[in-house]
Image 1: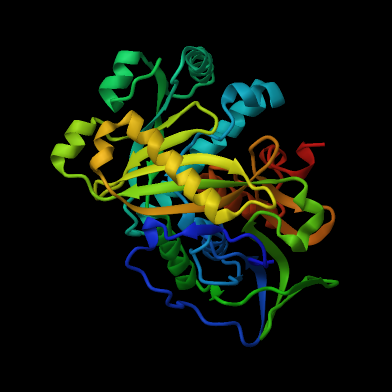
Image 2: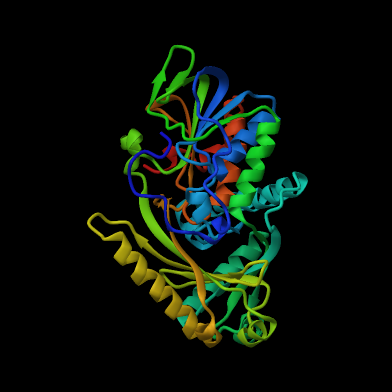
Amino acid sequence: MSRPPGPDLRVGRPLWLSGTDHKQRYPLLRSRIETDVAIVGGGMTGALIAYLFAASGISVCLLEAELVARGSTAASSALLLHEPDESLSALRRHYGLARSRRIWQLSRQAVNDLVGLLKRLKIDCDLVEQDAVYYAANRPAADRLRTECSLRSQAGFKNRWLTSAALRRLTALTGHGGIRSTGNAQFNPYHACLGVLSAAGGLGAAIFERSRVARIDVLRDGVRLRTDSGSVDARSVLIATGYASKYFRPLAGRFRMFRTYVLATEPLNRDQRHELGLGQVMVWDADRPYHYVRWTRDHRLLLGGEDSLLRGGQRRSTQFAASTRRLREHFEAQFPTLVDVKTESAWEGLFAMTPDSLPYIGAHQRYPRHLFALGYGGNGMTFGFLAAQMLLEQWRGERSADHDLFAFGRLR
């Protein structure tokens, strides 16, 4: 159900929420309504599902337990990457080249389609199309990335190898080379989510906040979702909560929960940006845990990474302080100019990973009349849009071999 008691989806105040209030934009569900599709979850995935379904003439009701766009969506660093968390090389070892290539193609198309939608809807969300650089800090990692670069080229994906010198000219980073790829983007996820929800509402989608789903009953010809003050009867329910909550305990073993951390600096002036030397690209390294850096539109740096497995018994405040400190120290070593630049925002987000780093999209035999979009890993915005497209196809009864790539049954 929508945001049951459990770990908070974020800690700290993300940059995207600076200057915003806790205003409730949509009403509390206080009645019984009927609809074709009920959506549980008011983040970016739920918003995209609501929009695509409503744009197809399907009646939609979306229920969010708290306030829309303020959970994992607000905690995102908002990299719209066409590259899944798993490299093409790693996926090929799991699924072979043909299936792995198709997964990458679908991911790339999802970024293109999402960027196109945001432009078409004229949503003001600081959208910028940007190249990405995946670089190696040591020689063994560089050897792996060279193999990956070659495989991507053979599979038809545009990318090119950066020598150590080219990497330094573009990013000011010292490394042993990297891969530069096109077809990526970045944006403000909070504003994007609000914009998509507004567009969905304009098409007739019913949206409710502070309407936690307490129970879902499967009926003979549909489902009934119950909240404290209302209910929704629908033909199907779509679960877009990002991970398997306690209400779906049989699915919980399919995921591991991770924490990720992000820092946002104060804006850098022209001299500071020149001295720092990072070009207009999104950058992440091949370390584990990995680190990434990108510019915002107002010349701040977003510094992220230090992902760690969520374990019971950890004091979250202590972990947060230690991880954000390590993150800052890592980037100060890479960019000495940062020593004199303040951190203005720091936050932690929670996300779910599957064994192969790909999401689960579609039905599960244990839950009739349910469709799921769960486990996006670190590529939530891209896979959220792909999930919305695929769930629309599946709800219409369309079948595609592409659906099998993200089905629950792919991993035994």
